[in-house]
Image 1 (cartoon, rainbow, N blue to C red):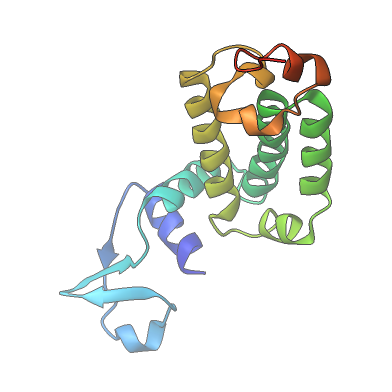
Image 2 (cartoon, rainbow, N blue to C red):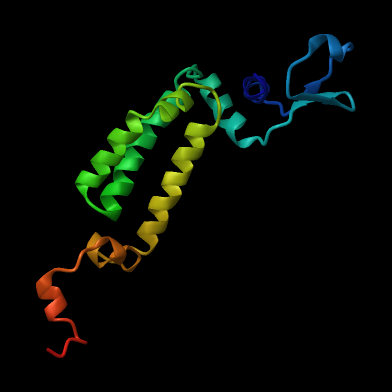
Length: 158
């Protein structure tokens, strides 16, 4: 409720509004009245994005759209780090997770945070992209050495 209230205030182009004369009669949970100003107690990042969605008439759609983006980014992360199959499995498991579905259907910031985390992870991996997943230094623990690779290693004297 407070996040939507804060987003509506931001959608109107304000960060705070004047407190009503009898502020106690107009209680909004997690909204603060101080020095004649009423404002939300949460950081402005998610309410600002929610305010854009409100202005565009997409308030009910913002988190499902972010959830869809998160599923695609989950696929991309699995694909980039391991393989297409692992990416598809990760996306399917994400899509069928009740926790994910519940958080993508509310107006909380969880879906936005998930998208930002996945985007950061993909950008981080792109920064150090060295080739195929099996040759990436950070992912060598995922590979299983074959018998021919073990026999031809530099330290093998047999």
